Each structure stands twice: as structure tokens, then as C-alpha cells.
Length: 360
Image (cartoon, rainbow, N blue to C red; front, side):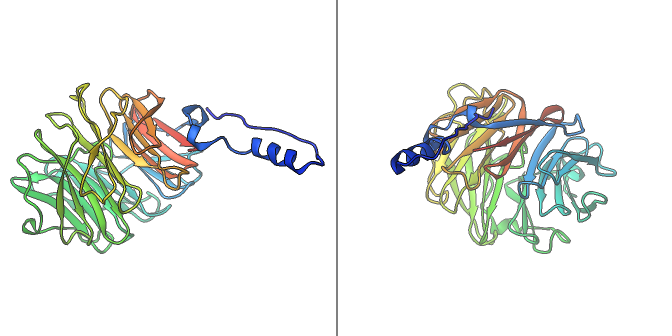
């Protein structure tokens, strides 16, 4: 809940007293920031579907994706949400969404073979165009992101010993599989967790990072040239069947965080790691206080100090020291989170849950 800060004063003749009183009216010291200073607002989504991914455009516009072919959109900061289902996609789970603006967005559904699809709207959800259907029965796509309105990338589970990756340079009019011979070899049974739409992140200038794993090891794939070439680095996050690196985000080109978990997460697992060299090396960080770890986590853009918000089925937490320590926000069931600014973020989850988070 929001702390109430107010004060009043009369005109004093001594400047020193005035300065002191003005200082008392200022915002609380950011180093002493606590969950009590947050504003949590439960918003009415208009659906009971599981909500799995969120993509804010700005403080007023955000899109959400979920199960049962569900999508949602707000243009007033979440005061109202428009919800709908993509025609012919009622059985699909949309595990990722990328919003371009108030009228244009992409949805990625997951599943084997033709269940993995990409849809696009340019008229605020009135119509959705099916841009891609996976024709490989062994294919299963997990996450998407875009560098700009035209250039995008999708990562999938490995097919044999080959990484499955798609790219577009024309706003999705065509999606092409990246030639496997230009990519690093996949680990046996390697894939990315399709739990929140945050297993892949892009940054301007062609940079991107992907978390992937098998039961033995977690890795980060990184590119600095729009996916033309890739490097691979090992993560210290604990991986085993049913748990591993789920989410990755960067606050600039050098500083990033990877977060993990799963229903099989164990108390001693390392579930967070940070980098300050663009992903070349990673160091373990404190375990987020969530029983099954993190499904999705992001940096809060333009926060006064680097701030990460992470969510999972056991709740929401945040860190203001690159994961060295964590504080609990709540214990509700979430799958993903996204922020437009310190004043506007949304955590989404089960039974149509949307919680707006602000004042970071």
C-alpha cells in the first residue's frame, strides 16, 4: 500500500528552517525503500483465463496474452481492460505477446507441431492475421521479442541437435527459420521454459539474450548483430528435470539478470544469477523467496536504483541490489510481469489476475 506523505508549513524568516522543512516533505530515501511504499491495485480483467504474458507499451497502453486463445488490451493504464479471443484459436495457449502500440500486437501460441503459431493484429484486436504455423511435428516454440516494429525473433525447443529459431525483417509478413548450421549446437533435449514470455529479451542495436537448458545445464545464448552470429555462456542457475532458467532481462547492454525455478525446484537450488559484462560471465545471487522460484522477472525502466521485479506461482518479490537481496510484495499466483516505468507495471496470473504495481 502507498505510504501517505504530507506536511504543511508557514513562511519562516530563517532560510535554514525553510530548507529543513522542504527536505522533510521530499520523497522518502530510496535506499530505505520498502514494500509498504508500493501501490498495488487489483484490476478487473474481464476474464477468468490463465494470463501468461504481458507487454507494456507505455504507462497507459499494455497487452496481455493467456490461455483459451485469450488476449487483453488497456489504453487507460488498466482502469479498463478489453478482452477477447482469437477466432479459431480457442484451444491455444498464448504464452507470449509483443505490443508495438495501441493497435498493433503479436501473439505466440505454444505446443507441438501446428499448435505453435504467430498471430498479428493491426486494428486493436478486431482482426488477427495468422502469420506462422509450425509444420514440424517435433517443433515447439517458446518466446518472442522484437528489436523494432519490423525485426523480430522467436526461440523454440531444440529439434534433435539443432536450435530452432525464427526471425522476421518485415513485421512478420514472412517468418524464416534461421539456418541451424549458423547457430551453436543444441544440448540434448534442450529447450526454453515457455512460462512467461521472458526467456528471450532484445535490446536496441541488434542485441539479444536467450536462456535455455536441459536437465544438466543452463545456458545463455547472446547476439550483438540481430542474430547473424551467436555466443554461448553457461549459467550457474541450478537445472534439473522440471526446473531451470526461466527468465532473462537486461537494464543496459552490460548489466542483466537471469532467474529460474519450476515446480521441481528444491530449497538449495541457485535460482538467480547476474552479469555486468553483457552476459559473458555470470555470478550466483540470492535465491528469491518464492517456493517454486521465478516464472518471469524484469527490470523496472528508469527506476531510481536498478530494480528487478520477479513473479511466480508463490507470489511477487523485488530486488534493488541486482539480486543480492529480495523483498516480498505479495503471495498471489502470478506467471509474468512487465513494466513501462516505475509508475506502471503489471503482474498477471491465474483466473484472470492482473495486479498493477507502481511507485518503485
